[in-house]
Image (cartoon, rainbow, N blue to C red):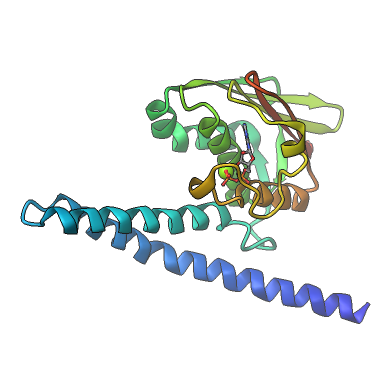
Length: 227
Ligand code: ADP
Ligand code: MG
């Protein structure tokens, strides 16, 4: 038992460390990308420097992707837990994602059957929705439809996120949430869904995935409803 407690404490320290490092690295990284963009656009720079700047931007963006997928996971026990109105939180995420959905030709539709509350840290909950929705958008390179639906069933609130993307094979669904599992090559981190499972679990929720090739994917989150 003591060993378990020690292991838990170690995990806590590692998580907090990862969280602060992610936060600290994020701002300088944004600055680096900004300056590289300036170099890339500088009319006095020669073609070679411009292409070097482009490679550097690509790599820096990759680092930033990893931080973005991981940031909240890094602090699984922050004490910002509160009651969240799911409709409000989903709308916030919709706003954050608006430029991306516009760019990718994706329409978002929401159906709120229930304006309920769940318990958790809003930052973490946003991370969950963002990681799921980002995957959906990436599964629809030609554009498509994203539906977010809330349903109340007895003492649970379900949030169902459906896309009309390329779908997943059963053997890939089975691997969702496995660290570094990604079918996106250099473009993927394989951390997004691991973070989703981890956070939802910490909120006493569950994740259910159904998918059909060339039809789309549905991810249903279920949380205890607080009334
Ligand atoms: P990443 O997005 O960085 O690859 P994730 O953990 O977010 O890592 O997702 C793992 C893999 O699961 C993705 O590479 C993709 O192949 C698959 N996947 C996740 N969500 C969807 C979806 N909505 N539609 C199709 N495939 C998906
Ligand atoms: Mg992802």
